[in-house]
Length: 212
Ligand SMILES: Nc1nc2c(ncn2[C@@H]2O[C@H](COP(=O)(O)OP(=O)(O)OP(=O)(O)O)[C@@H](O)[C@H]2O)c(=O)[nH]1
Ligand SMILES: [Mg+2]
Image (cartoon, rainbow, N blue to C red; front, side, top):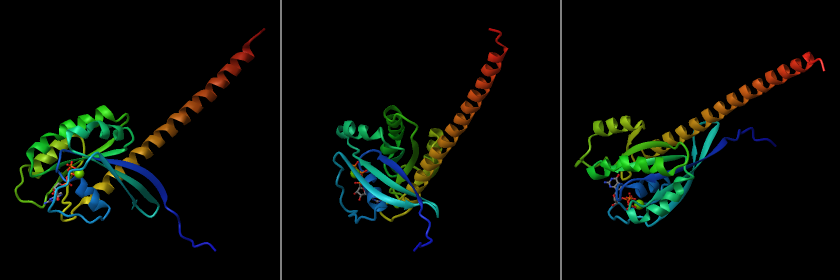
């Protein structure tokens, strides 16, 4: 018996969390998977970690999201670089209460551009936005995001504010990019097909002029 329930189309999306030490990358990842997190303690990530979650986008589409958590510490950069090759999107995270982590954002964007072989969708994330002792205002962060040509989101992993929305928005951007790439290649293929038909008919009619 048919249930009448339509299956959603599933897309696979791999995202990367990048940013300086202690900006809250792991906390964002744990919030995204609803894993319990102790916010009193800081345990630096060693190497790299991965979680998976299915995200419902709308009635027809869902995404199987693989989210890679990288270590902010310099000594792990070689390991994390390998993952750049496979990701579709990257979240560059800074701590709104730590100016140094904000200034490092340009370097992280450069890292992505140097190590990812293809066009990666990016967004800038100001985390720890629940705290009052800010060193980076929302306006300044927005301005920087604008210069970098990426969207800006503020999150609080601690209070579970805006994490789901930020990841969903980046996943959506990746899916839109893939669709427009597919549309572009369909247009290119159609044009190539038309050109080859025109060329064939031209060469055929030239053949018919041949007197030999
Ligand atoms: N107040 C507040 N604290 C947070 C928030 N997110 C993370 N923290 C705390 O900030 C510290 C660092 O968080 P992590 O998630 O471990 O940071 P990380 O970016 O993964 O650090 P590395 O793994 O070393 O690169 C921890 O003590 C967290 O509990 C937040 O939104 N608000
Ligand atoms: Mg971590």
